[in-house]
Image 1 (cartoon, rainbow, N blue to C red):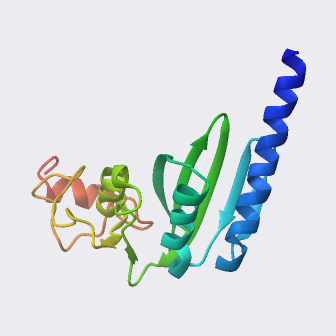
Image 2: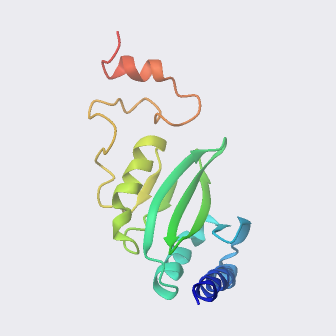
Length: 168
């Protein structure tokens, strides 16, 4: 009996992944990778909020575990990671590094407020409509506005330490 239930759970996860791909296809979602426990889809920046809404409101994926940023050269990749049972669904999008702006997902996922603040501090991404973009979460209050965010490639950690008074 336990073996049969486990097989049913695994099959339903595969069905869930197939359903997610099908539902996100109008948003031009492209599967990057996947396995029986991981589904990674890339969506255009202008479709990220609609895609997140679909996941949460229509498919019931409510557990956003994190939003991460990654400097990939000319752009910044955002990864919205959801947990569902023992499965992971990653929704990725890329935004311009020269104008790092994207709509906030906090109306859809209120718990994302701190994740977006972290990405803002570390990568300089402005989440338009976010209620606390004027605050710092991880950076010190005296972090100079003329210095780039600390996790962008090419940022000098030595200059940052000197600017905030950690080193002379």
